[in-house]
Image (cartoon, rainbow, N blue to C red; front, side, top):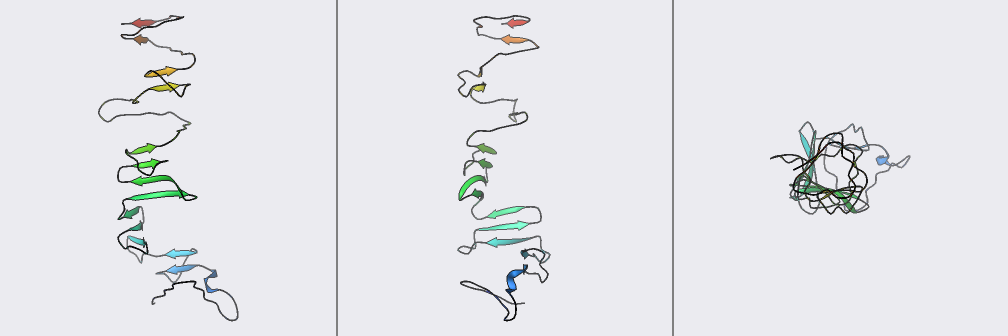
Length: 170
């Protein structure tokens, strides 16, 4: 019940035994369950504040993490930002996502990938390639194409060898 502060190394040892900090350390609790146990004292949340400015801090609560002041959270590995969350969205490979999800780099998926726009339909902006990384049309397929339903071509042309089962050309 009091304050403890240090501007350098801090240790507490007993002459006959060991370091007092060898076990669990508690803040606002006398019965810490972990190496560092910070208790909110029954409040909904507690904060971890930076030492240089009280306007920027990370608040931890029962079901949320809240970044106060700067409006973003970065996740780093070896001092390199791998993922960032800001007021716009989640960025992977970028620190400034411009949409709900912005990925800088390749995406790998084991299941299906679906892109939907709230006002209409499924879409992919730009060209889409299957079996190629450089599609030069809205859909470029490197390899054979198989269809069990109707294939429709509007205002286009089909050239080279064509095996037709059911083909509609408008």
